[in-house]
Image (cartoon, rainbow, N blue to C red):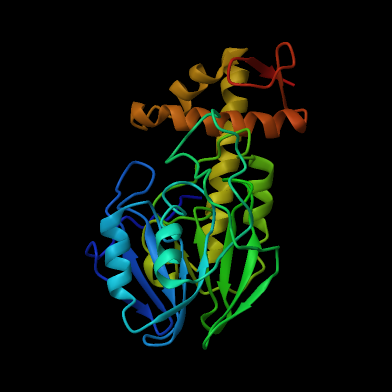
Length: 306
């Protein structure tokens, strides 16, 4: 099943866009191979009221100034963080300083300093004022949101469900423009599968990823749940590729697999691809489908069929 990626995005940096009656967005000028055009910071609530800000973004003066300008006339009551990569949470410090609003997240950054960094690295300085558990409801001025713990990309990842509009702020868990990087040790493919599957029975009509365009039937030709099914099918296809590599070629290293599996992907992304392959191998080794020679399941191992 092909993933119906959404590559088009109509926006202007530093300008707030009204996406629905309760949702606005400002995009930071931090484009990269992992952030697409940049971090989309969402404002939830009606203009002039008490609002929540989701993912204030990087520690970037221009972006925070644009966000604060967009918030003139609003009162920020909540600062919500989907997770603690540096393109999502560092801007919360200045936003809190100016507005006095408390921060809410699952927890601080889980990886120790010196760990393997992918994407934008970890925000080790962030400490939320309030810890959110799975299912916690937050009630604001005309809006209600529930926290969904969705580990996989990172263990402290949350999505936020906006009940009034049946919308889900999906962070980096589900993005319309790209698949999600899963990088061990904190990135976990088994958790990621489980977190994707828990979205399938939900009745969300639109996803708002932190990077890229909204995901709904209008933008992708499918409702969000069918988009998630395509992501799951893609990941299972990667595991089929791993089995095929080992069947055809015998024992292989991760770089050897990446060369074959990601031949159509630019080489500068192969490092991130190797982390996802490792995450797949850890998952598959736990199920007994593959085995690392010497039993050390890591990026240096040689793998064979289990």
